[in-house]
Image: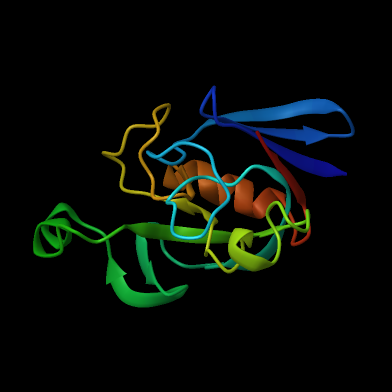
Length: 158
């Protein structure tokens, strides 16, 4: 059974299958650090699951807004046209908390906060915090991970 572990301190996502390390990915978590409160723009900690997988078969660099493809493909020119957009690209793994009072329900609900593992422009550095709460990955890494896991895969974030 595959599980994911996200280390905020190390900016790393690890894939584990039956206690065996399968793969490590460099990631980027929240610029504001770790935290569970709504509107904090922090990455929530604790046990989660992948509640939904969005974007199967979409082209690399497909742009998503509100979890739907806009029909756009990210380019530097598009970025110049929308400099303030929070770029969610290629695939979305939508997280849902499992710990009531910590990351599920109320003002701490990860899913209602729209926290994802998602793709990002290639020029975004991995290994350093920079998101608005989500977990960013390089697009090719995200496609590989997306194809490797199923909905309800457990994700531990610390």
